[in-house]
Length: 57
Length: 345
Image (tube, rainbow over all chains, first blue to last red; front, side):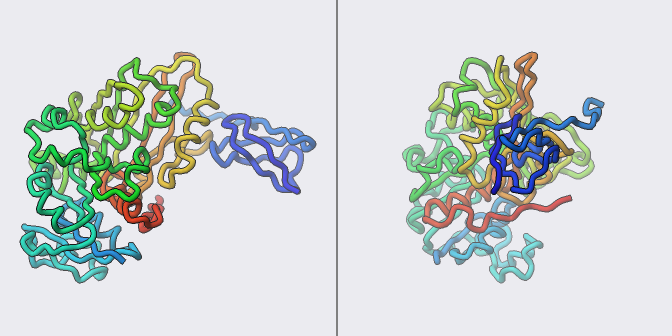
């Protein structure tokens, strides 16, 4: 059974496979944000901590 | 199967039409015309089509009746002979600027001369399917689109349609464009030593395509469009950034508006990525395609937003949209012959 959740950033609907694991990282299909699975029952996603890059250089 | 001819097939837009239509399973290309290259094989002018077709250019006097006539002539030429063309084909798609504007007075203001066939202006549906799909379905006559107008319109369309962007502020559109926008005929400014490596502002005010964008958005108010166009080191491509102020908007509202506008449009893709190096629309990735990539960047602290769109000026900005119009006018699947994904890197 798959889990359905939404991206906390862009609200895209996200289908998680049944074997999704706690703290697994996955990308949002729409905005590409890296998400972390914080809970499985119910599913709770949050933005994963990002590697810091200097995009302003 | 329908029989299609291309008038003015030796130009860049005409060549792109020919390339796309050669892959269209429901189209037979009957004739291609060129006054300068009559008698030559298509590949002698469009070398990438070697081995794809044995068609040779003919002069316009040899043009025969067909089902659909594409006109890819310089601006001003189609309107002078539109009645003759209409006698040859029940359906016409004109890529030039001749039948884009509904108002002959606005045409004269932007193109510097009175329109030769103003009675035809209302008969043409504006040829941007993403904003005018219903009018194009089954239409007999479709206009082309301005490449820069297309990029600006698609950059702002989602927010205008959602009522988030209203006609209470000027829309400053900055465009970077490639050399193929200037067409096939060489000029002093297109000479390689003068063109290579440029970042050349060539029209900072009063661009003709402002009228086209204003007309397309007119259902939502009178938008004050101001375009500034700069030539850059690209052959194909147009990238628009439209700068507006939208205080207090949430990122999720952008997403909702863009999804509502584009989820049913097969050739518009939302590019607003959190990660990677391709976070925003880029024209280089779109060369040879009919896609328009749209996105935005928003600063919640100031409310300033840059609304973005990238296209191939010869694809979505000209011949790709024209083939998409053909599909809608003739009842074909909208994406037929247009699914090339481009190449990378």
